[in-house]
Image (cartoon, rainbow, N blue to C red; front, side, top):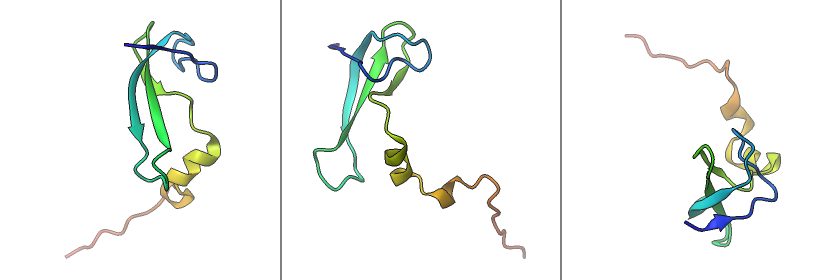
Length: 79
């Protein structure tokens, strides 16, 4: 595997900056094919994570506010 420089996102588990490229994938919800995600594997603890981490604004594009309501009620049809 190719070693990747991680200036922006150290491993969230062990804080190591030594990672290798795990997978590069296209964002299927993106409007252009140039937007993609890079997954890396930490050489120390083996955690796989996005690098760089998405910004808060990018995360909200994929998770609208109404989907994050932990107290949302669901109606169950009764016979």
